[in-house]
Length: 344
Image (tube, rainbow, N blue to C red):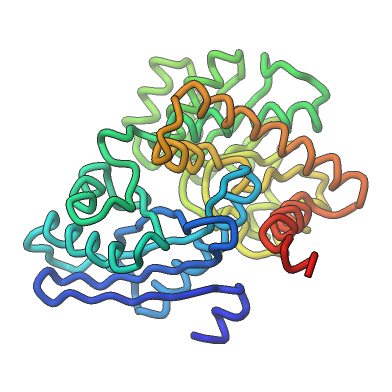
């Protein structure tokens, strides 16, 4: 465990248990150099404590990098609650988790993530103020989608040489809260939209309401398009799927899209531009962080729109130095996070 922490420069790993509610939780804190760690709470079944810890640490590192490149004075953290087979009282379980967060004295701020909801955050808020994404704070999905839209525009500028998305064919994989909001924005911009989701009802809704073209879930990678936008689960960019891609760029909302660091090089070798996921999907983090600070919605939206500018910078440096955008993004984030060490 310590070797894994050292490998990712992980600052702390906290394990919590509450017998009365069945709570088993992990909070990973990657770095607090820029400010308190902020990151969502996942509520999912895990095969082992090792698997849960690895997930939390990987995601916490990504949150550090995301916050740095989004210009936030926040560190990166992530929580996972191992979902038990039977939960007698979900509200009590999340209140117990709120007490765990409170024990860290502001070192970690939580938010919604896979398997959790604003109602769960409301339960946590009964025990600590170090929580956002409550029902009062609002849904971050529209701001996440807005940031991804800005990123897709940046990718189109670089790869297609055009400012407008009119006529640009986008293959959108995943129609969850973020994916569907993005679909609506893309159609409003005049994009030609292809959609896929395991939920056939969502696909039909996008077809009926947005004029989208449905694509079978197992055919998304080989669908001819300008932009492939993964907006579902992570780990979709593997050697096999990259070999099938028929697009100019990959720019989507999903976290941890690359199966490993080598996948970025495979995309680069094929001439497919990759928008690093933790850069393009930073709109949700900006929403929860700035809402927690009391920043007005208009100012938050303005900050989210800068996602495109950051990607322009990454793409330009990538082209100039002959390195993948993923590598450039990592180096830019590390330069911000560890700036004080470089000066010492």
